[in-house]
Image (cartoon, rainbow, N blue to C red; front, side):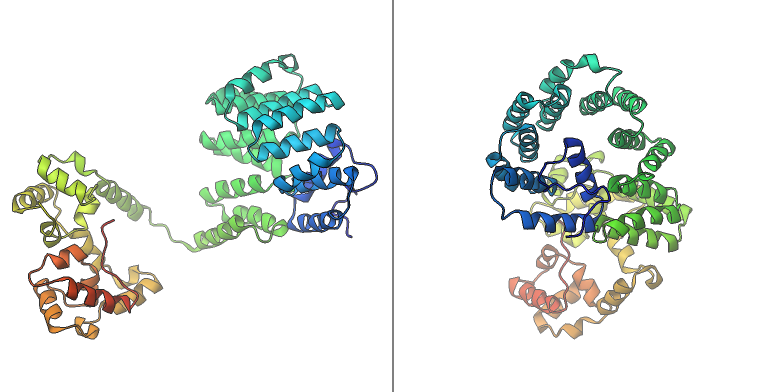
Length: 436
């Protein structure tokens, strides 16, 4: 079997590697898809072995691969030792069995586990359980490691971050890096906090420090790629994503993001056009509650699931009047408000109808060809055709812009005609418009 690391760390040797080496092995296993596959193959060969010693090694191996339920089953059968209780506790934590995890961490102390390490493991467990009070209480028991232990400050940073004390979190991550400049997890959290606070340059600098070292830190590379793309530095973004794909060829997020970057390279950006679109979007998102409507009108619109101005401009007069309890008085009230803003019912539908062909995608242009076909192509009954003529429906596109309620609101148009139309347009892969 091919060795997966240049360090030649063999989890299944006669003597179990040290905890530090096992942690290093885990990092290398997850640094590439190939390493993970090779390790999984090695583990598969070991699973048939029996005995407490074999159960310990395979249990740790299953934990490394994220097979936590199987890891717990194996480790529970292994001989009692420091490694057993620590990895058993970690697997239990991943499964959300926090109380059991804490108990097993505590047991490891009887087998020579480092007290600071175990205390910080329990802090992590309490934090995962959202028991921040217990995490803080546990962390205070090792306050003497302040300005001494990088891991202590890293855990304190995570806790204060969970508590919403972001400034304190950043200070602790920086302190962890002062004590241990190669602490990648502290670097990542610091970069992430800078990113969230808008300090993109600092975030990029921290992420670059992480990705300059091996093994590959996928999340740092992906976040760095996002920052580069935001700055329109597509070549640099591609380098980051390509490095991820070099080691993890099937990484779905990287694959999708690579496509986005390639699209962005050729995308023409019209700043003024985008500003106009943003302003229009803000107007259309205006809630109906901002308008001074009568209680009757407001209640009718709410029952029709019309919440914003855009919803209102996506509906016609006939459609409004087809709803129960919505009368001419409410219609005049709404039209008067829209008139003051230079708007009218069905306005958005009309804009969609007259969108220039060159503004559409290839698929949309194909759909437009179908939608422009005359209604006669559907071969409807005479009764249905007449009813649609009353609604000024001339093409298939006119028809699919109507809702069932709008059609049923037309005189002499019944359920039979509605079913006939739904069947006809359904055969074309189309459907009537829905409000929800």
